[in-house]
Length: 145
Image 1 (cartoon, one colour):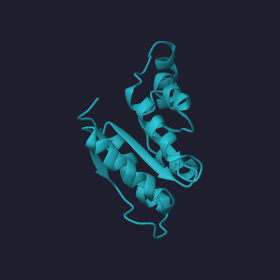
Image 2 (cartoon, one colour):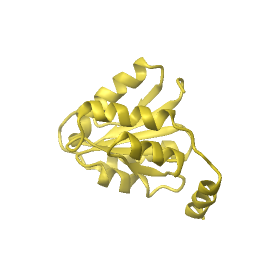
Image 3 (cartoon, helix red, strand yellow):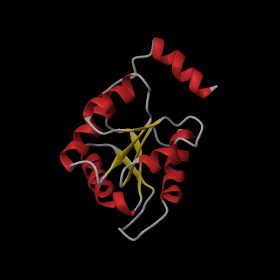
Image 4 (tube, one colour):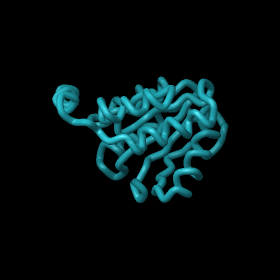
């Protein structure tokens, strides 16, 4: 869905993929809001992930992508915010299921663990997959209680 506003953030270990994704998605018509970082100079991932997660939680951005070395810490930081469902994804099937079954509005990727072409497939799968609802909606409601 082009025109969608996507929050994008990374620490230093995910900077290269964040920059690549920002360019790629903007070229495809998505509106990118970049919350940093701006280089490979070391930063603390909670500081850059927090504003992106808040933007998704508040509806400023419809979706969010965070990138780190493994993606684990970034997902943990994002999931501290009520209304955020950030999934660590490692292939296009994990991304598809994160959307279809978990209504993931953010994903977290590990630059040190994933090839660039895999990251592109993961993001594409996540962006085009709709939430299935049904029994999954009940489970999402339980998360939000």
